[in-house]
Length: 229
Ligand code: GLN
Image (cartoon, rainbow, N blue to C red):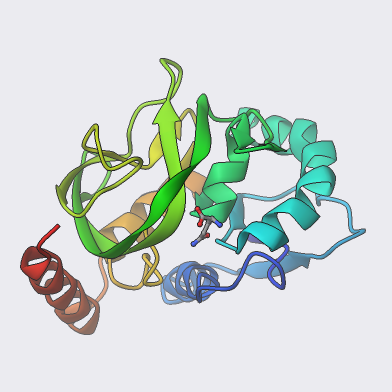
């Protein structure tokens, strides 16, 4: 399996690289060979990725990388069309839409994002069809609005989600999946990590011992329930 991590230096402010480590390790624990390729500025996108990951980043980093990402958009779209999974968190998720405020996005997810007046900040939980309850930490100023082409990844059960108003969180459109949830999100939600892996390699995965991961998941749920707004 090949995982491609896009711009880990710029889109990596919030520890989202933990998602890549989690995916790679969970595949290796099943005896699957995994390579992780980092794509840095000036690099081209490998054409044999099974999963492409993009993390969150500050506005400045997003602006800086947007032109290069935009040029890469057709290749990312092609990868998704041939079956690769594209998974993005927060700043990366915003850039997959048509724009983040003034910054043009890749247009691969039918959504757009506008800057908000305050930050959406705190532990959150959502109900999803792909992996049941997912917990994480939201930390963003942007407000994201989905168009008809994208479905929400989940419904907020605690927290504020895409825009603080419509109860949605994240988006799915074909093989392209985005969420605002940090944590990093995948180590705390092993079912979500395995769902992405299984989709990427098109194989069922044998269960593994997730006692520690589920303890982290439960703790996230507890924290999300205590959140007041
Ligand atoms: N800069 C973006 C925002 O604040 C994304 C932040 C992030 O990736 N956590 O909306």
